[in-house]
Length: 416
Image 1 (cartoon, one colour):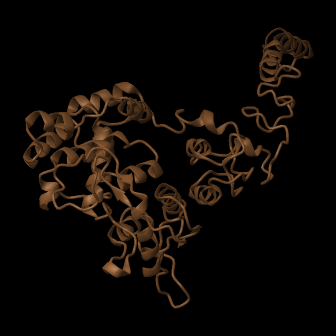
Image 2 (cartoon, one colour):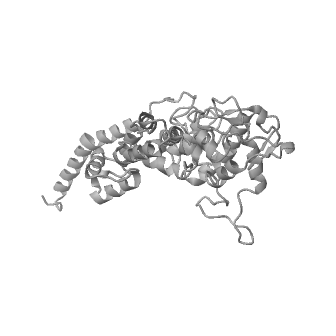
Image 3 (cartoon, helix red, strand yellow):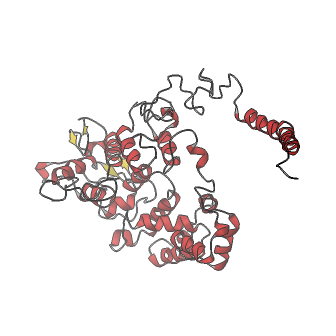
């Protein structure tokens, strides 16, 4: 049909109008209808209509938006307002932990706690706002492994297991995403050591523990958990080369099982379990560490205090958020703590004994329970004031109070 003829032009115009009114206009109206929320809808029940609410997922009648990014604080883990939730926000969050800071109180319960930390972690590397939680796990955030080559899938599994088989690679591809595989791994019951070691003897032979470790590492279905537990064991180190732990393979096995069972948990919780484990108490001499007694030439043992700072947590030097070492005006690394800090923490870690012991001093440690956390003996705990990294512990606190607050102090350090 020629478009030069005026009659033909009119026919084309009428046909376009007909198509618009019969097909396109109803479709556009349908899209508009499904995208507009119901008038007056208020899904979080805070009295603010969803159309006006800057956070529809959590009740926030005050509509706080401290960084001015149009997303309410209760739905916004972007604490520094740079439009991405990243490590800098984690650093800011740590300084507000256990406070009532409204900007970091992401779930609006009045306290900045682990629930808020979980929300912050779920939004990591995402833009701020209510949409962030829905981004987790979608194809823009999680690559579809169906498009991965065998080499790419094998690379991922080599990082997250003790070595993949061809069946492992094919299984990962069949699941459809790395996230699904990780979720599956998290839900698999831990492969543990202690039952095997107990079934093999009285716990004096370390070969039995070595056997079950290798079996779990090679054949265990919970490969990610075993790999993470192994990594943790190289940070929270204990060794059974001395006599007391060499013949305490029940305790050694229980310690590794504890790392395995807490492999996907919270660092602060794990740090406390490590601190109070009897095998750690023996290895780094926190067990039966006691307050100063000048008459007997006794002072608190500094072994665990030094290692928990240097090896288990903050390290020797202050770090930037990118992991680089901070330096002073003379270009020297800035220490994270001093000898005085170690001595103060040593006072914290006094007054702890085996759970089943009725004596403070004994040469034979083999007969005691090494699976139950150590318990406080207050008469041997230093109750003086203690100056730590970022806080001062008041005098006359119990051993448990000092321990909890000291571990919080470590946990909240920016290096961690």
